[in-house]
Length: 187
Image (cartoon, rainbow, N blue to C red):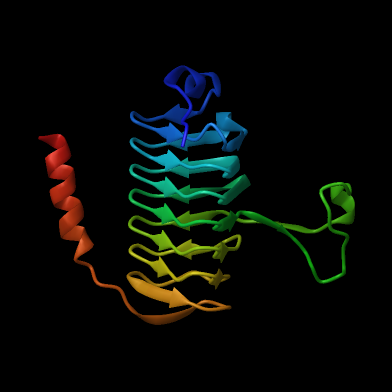
């Protein structure tokens, strides 16, 4: 996988860009001036990032993900990961039939939902899952593959299915591992 050079990253004019950031040269970045990318975060091949986005430290966005921050924004706090093909959306059309849908139609004929999305620290989202506007995935949440998250979650839960339902609690051992990891980085 090829990554953009430091100078190529700087040319994109991110709102802020941490140290050690890696972004694939095959990723598509739109509205970089609205994006904040934290230290040591990585965006892989064939990802599309657009609109207002904040990635914390040590966040990983695997190949073929979409983060559509729009105006409302998407935030991934420290140590979040999106597996292959995850979609995170901060905006959506009204599918009820009461209004038209399409980016080609003027706003006066549509009703769009714009609502921020937050993934708190230590969240992992499994392959091909979708997170809809207005959702908060609480700290330590694990979202299983192909899960549709339409409502906010409780902390430290494992969620699966369409729509997402809590399967069981997630262990918190990784908190100690995170502390040790960060101490080693500071040493």
